[in-house]
Amino acid sequence: MPKVNAETVATSPEAVAQQLAAARYLADDSLATAIFLAIRLGKPLLLEGAPGVGKTEAAKAIAELLGRDLVRLQCYEGIDAAHALYEWNYQRQLLAIRHAGEHEIDIYDDRFLIARPLLQVLRAPEQRVLLVDEIDRSDHEFEALLLEFLSDFQISIPERGTIRAEAQPIVILTSNRTRELAEALRRRCVYHWIGYPDARREAEIIMLRAGDVAEATARAVATAVQTIRARPLAKPPGIAEAVEWANAATILEKGGSPWPEAFRRAIGVLIKDEEDLSYIAPELGRIVEEALA
Image 1 (cartoon, one colour):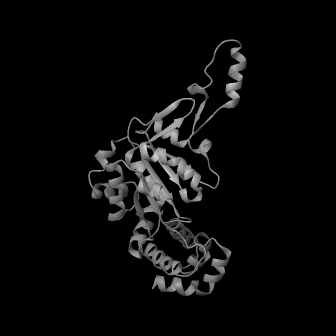
Image 2 (tube, helix red, strand yellow):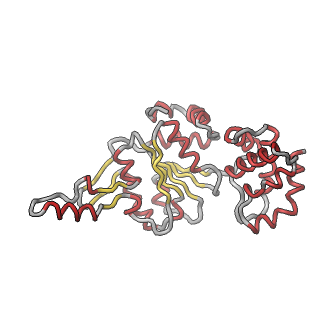
Image 3 (cartoon, helix red, strand yellow):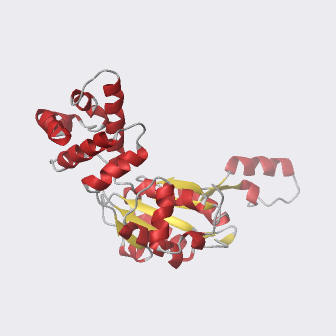
């Protein structure tokens, strides 16, 4: 997809929703509005919600509609500047010093600098979209490290000075809300909570993203998944799992397993926790039959 100017895409929330649909992502009015405002205001977009509701997929769709590469920074406990911002290639610096002998050499030249996701985006903000995925998995120290970047879209390298973006980067942060994020981080962002869709919209998503799945199958899957999510499960299935379940059941049905047996046999692509499987197993037959009715 060719690169496009962000403002030509974000002419209105409705235009954003249409562009996302073309990228195979269905966004409701509130999400489309949040994306529109983040782009037009030049602010990061913070998407919170349960695992599997489509936060990361939204970032991928935004990058696709803008014709930009998605640079993904996957957060985890203990992540630091060397993984997020930059680091120096010490081995190459040492080799350069040895080869230089008595000659002067700038060991802080660009060729010794390893750009990590944040620096990569600062260097080419019109070609890349930054996804800071699952920011809640990091610690408060890492959040503090991000503040300079999110406030002014710049980073400071002691040996080089401050590097600023020449244009406004598009930045999306996601959080599963396993912990509360700092208020300073939230204030810098346009915020949106993504919840699970209702059965009608989830059926539409399944039809859009699944392979060769009939409309009746998509509706049955969406209805059954809504019922299953209402149970007290440790790991409720996300939208991606619902799509996989529809695909898997369709494959089994075409291979000779009748409905609703195909759904029961494919349950392992929907529920991926042993205790949840044991809990839902006695009810699964009834749930599937009611969804198919």
